[in-house]
Length: 379
Picture: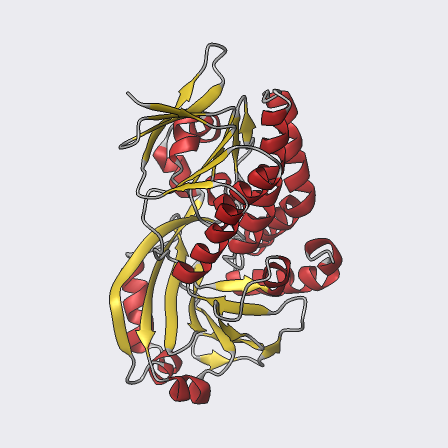
């Protein structure tokens, strides 16, 4: 079996993985960014990106679909007062194929080697039971001093490294309890109609029977429409919630009138009830969805993935170059992300637990965000 060696291997070329690879390479580490698919590829995601990320990463205008100015909350079939989004809260919308490809290009320009179409089967362990690389399906063994798992909520790196045993006792049902299931589709509609009906506004729909929400996000000639619901609270299949929404909600019907479905309706699990810790071990770090870093109220994952990915890449490079990739050293990574984003993620989970009402929780977190804007979005 063939083998290659790196300082740092990052698995998953989403926002967390690309940022980890970028900063590991910038830190001087020989870095591989391993992605199971060929880029560009789509991911289930509303495509909302915080203005802080856009500015921090200098996202080009060619990647930006729309600059969001308002959030329109709909309770049942009743529109509430539109909420203006000031600069620090403002989102841009993107399509994930172009957005993720741009982030990956930053990592490659910094010196990371991109390995596309390379599924990872498992981690490999060294003599001291430390993670020392990965076994791939088609490119043999890749060895490293540090592996960063940024490969999503069902992370192969987390499962085969032993994290799932610690978090969920290897019981998939316990994992499911920490997830929501989301269904999403893209609908094509002329830009002039989107401007007239939706404009630069995201729509969030809440129902009493749904522990989650529906969304409609405007893009260039496309409306991204989705439904997310907690796996523990649903009374019917997620696709049924989605179909009922697009076919029966009067506001959704009006917004989508004449729109054409592009491709297939997609579905995926998303973490939503707080982070999974610990997120480090001997020779291994986890970032993004693989460690549960998604807001349980907003469903936002890109911002948190970017912040965690930057930290993971910097610590992975330092660990590899100093030949100290022990869990003790890598624990400082978790201290950093908990300080930067952890308390804000836990605030979302707390608001949802306390209210058991996604709309009330969103109101609480909006107030919280305004109060903590300097911590969330440092200049």
